[in-house]
Amino acid sequence: MRKSDLNSQSEFLETTFISIPDLIESETKRYGHRTALIVDSVSLTFDALKRFVDKTAAALQCGGLGHGDCVAICAQSSIEYVVTFLAGLRAGIVVAPLPTSASPEALKSMIVDSSAQIIFYDRTCMILFNQRRWKLRSTRYFLRKRKVF
Image 1 (cartoon, rainbow, N blue to C red):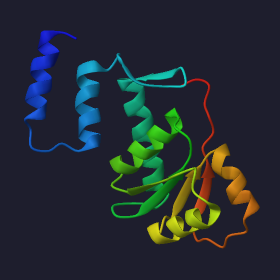
Image 2: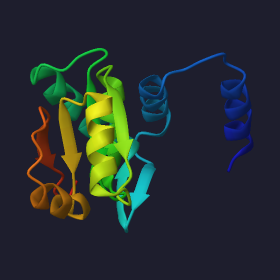
Image 3: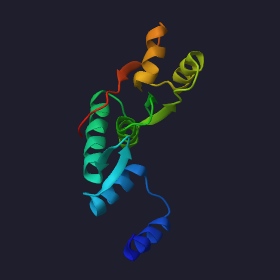
């Protein structure tokens, strides 16, 4: 790490508040071509992360979600999880991360309590959702792993 990076980081830490979407925006301007995220040997640059977050946020908004609405995510750590989580924040949506280790009854309770309109899930939670015939008002979307971003 360069000394100039340390100076700008300490200046950054002295700011009173910055939202996560604003932080991504500012870091993309500074480090666009650098790696922002690595999960399971898949990496994204800041430019790519911002692009996917913006596209996903726009899709959520086009789907009728907006400030104060809720989505839930029940999935293992992945690039898709991070992008979905950050896109929710970018769109002003409340994001409820659900633990994949929860019992089916606990998951159902968390989903109902969160009032999530959409649930994003991966293979880990797919079995739970397919085994149960829950009558939930939430729409469910499967998070598919991408090979290339």
